[in-house]
View 1 (cartoon, rainbow, N blue to C red):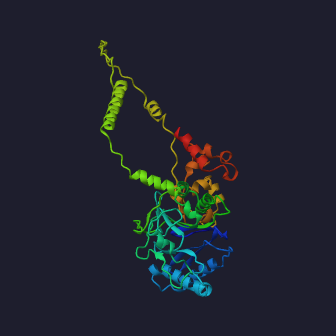
View 2 (cartoon, rainbow, N blue to C red; view 1 turned 90 degrees about the horizontal axis):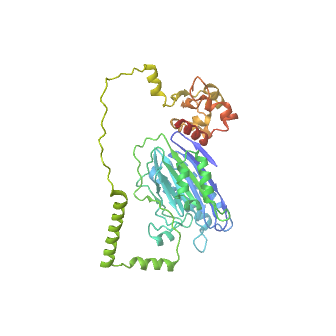
View 3 (tube, one colour; view 1 turned 45 degrees about the horizontal axis):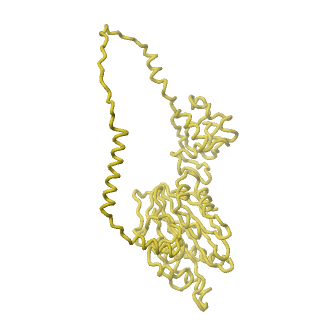
Amino acid sequence: MTTKKFNKFEYAALADPGKAGIAGVHYQDVFETPLGHAFVLVADHHAEDGSSELCEIALERIRYYMNHDAEEIREEITTNALIYTSGYIYQHYNKDAPKPGKGLSCLCVLYGDDQIHYSWVGDVGLYLFTGKRMHWLSWMDQRNSGSTAGNSEEAQKQVLLGQQTIIEPASNCDAPLKPVNGDKLILVSGTVGKCIHTKETKRILKDSMPLQTKVNRILRHADHDRAQQSGALIILRFHAISNKERIISADAKMQTSVQPEKKDDMAGKKTKTAQKKMPVSMLGLILWILGFLAITYFVYDLFIYDPHPPVSIEVPQPEAGPDETINIPEEVAEEVADADLPAALPDDITYTVRSGDTWGRVYSQFMVCSWFVINHPPNTGRFGSQGSLIAGQRLQIPVRYSGDAQLNPNYYNEFTADKVGDGCRNVDRNFLEAFEDRLGQ
């Protein structure tokens, strides 16, 4: 797996190459160009011998073009890179073929200046997950999910990468995508695209787990039968970008759940049944009204009508005696007022990471396990790969989880070495939730 973190985004990428037959072969590549970072997926869905030669050549040609034609405008470079690569593969491998040669599916994405341009051919998918909704950005292609967002005959006749000298990739060149902080861009090929919109995948994407863990879990979710499953997956998560408003192409649409395929005869029966309109008879209307009145009467009789209403009886009040004043000492009143309040949690301490700092040094100073610091919301996006410290970053140390009696006088007993374990091995999400439950009681 490849995973990296930059100033404005981080990404994790993994490909299951697959093999010949149903699975096909799938490859991914991420590299930096003069115009920004490029993300590429290439798939040969019908590889007869499982060879990865064409996929590797396609990735090499796309990288070459985008690194040597930096003078092109950003809006056209992804489309032109696919056209150039298709012509190269056709001339070297398919020129003398008696029928259209092998074709590849390909998705090319360029991110720079907080904008995203992309082009694609074939069965690949691009999605934007906003935390609540999954937007399908490459929906103009017919996919295996059964959705027909476009002319299915045109989708079937689409020319793949390498089948002709000149192809016409689909693209968003006229309306660049502009994400906002927290958005996730998802590139998929193969069977991964069939599960990307499921509830399980959305639950994984919403979780606070590291990005590389999300990629592994989504691939495992898709890989129910490894003999026939393969694909590639890249996830980008954006942070510290300048866009204040999210802009999505008008061609995008909401991804819906996949419905199971039904036999033609069942579909015909359902259509005929839906076309029949049953007129409402007068008798049926009368019966419906009588039923409604009966239910209303039962509700009134059981919950509203009271056959024995309460009777008010005046009770003579004793004569009022002289007023008596009870003096309570202020110290006792304050103790009674504060008796039911939980002890206060200490505020976070701001700490600037210095060169050479380690998690052991941070723990010896604050006695706070690194898991609490990494998963503290104010510290999001301030660590390197796999949660490493970055010199110069200002971190908020949640000393409410400290085992130091001076920093956390009321709750330090909850985080002593015997509670968190050697090397803080006991600390995880369950440990934190158990402490918060005790605090709420």
